[in-house]
Length: 83
Image (cartoon, rainbow, N blue to C red; front, side, top):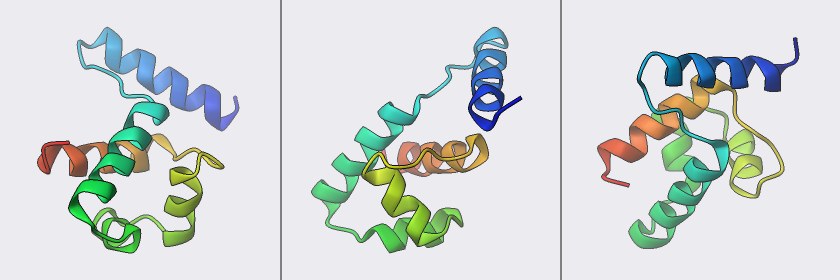
């Protein structure tokens, strides 16, 4: 099973348990909006959620997807910031 299939399986499992699964695209859009409105650096967020800076930069530009665990941490961070 590939990483993409694993992440999709986790998302489906969350939906089945009643949780709303987030997509890479929706989190990416919220991240870009947060950075634009708050004026924070991507490295600040990377360190807060313990994801390498280079990976976050590639995620932001849609050149790479995050693992589900990293995506969940970013989603939680953005939710805590009301984004």
